[in-house]
Image 1 (cartoon, one colour):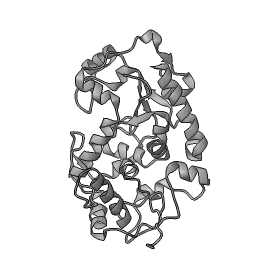
Image 2 (cartoon, rainbow, N blue to C red):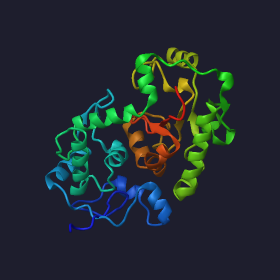
Image 3 (cartoon, one colour):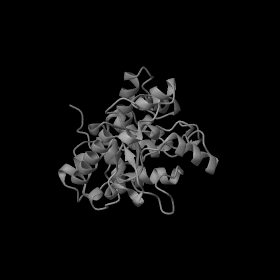
Image 4 (cartoon, one colour):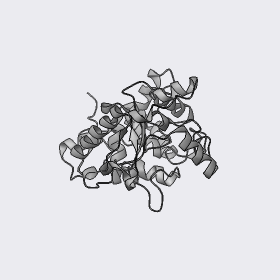
Length: 295
């Protein structure tokens, strides 16, 4: 029998070097057992079995891999760590051999060489899998989806609006969101302690609204401003999951995206949003889409 496996993800224990801030920040021993389970912490595993060489490459690459997974050059994949760890079914620190072993198993299952290293090709395969779970992506490849009749949209309650903005969503998406936010607050006291977390700051946006904003701001394409936004469906929403000091909650600056990815609300969402029918656009930690009804 092999050694028991101990988790380092959401745990501050060092392997060979000081623990990455992402893990120390995300874990707290004060959580109840149910809250620890909700955010993915498991304290009874050991992450030592696996390829040590791959673990060393991951330890270096998490903050040095040069790639452009969403069209913009990025350095390192730490921002995407919660998604990657959830995708491969691990709770181990990315520098450990067990993380590499779990990744190698995922690579093998997806027809890739099981090297156990997060490289550009492996991330591209994961990105394809993540994007395939977004019905909007498939629909928009055929034609930009028509918006719903605004008279049939539901109003977002003022108490759920970050900044007091008046917003609308399809009724089913709004109900699923409210159930999800209630569950998050019940399952993780850190989320419950900050009333702003998981409030909405963008929901349905009409094509006319986006067109006018694009003309006004002059940045309408690509990852900066989509010409065919998922928000036109009434199924997409932006959640306040925190923001780096001095930055807006939807700033695409790497510092802001990394800050959000380290927070309890985003990590809870990665692990639990699918229970309520939501999927994430990986480049934007705050952007989630409901899959409970056709586009």
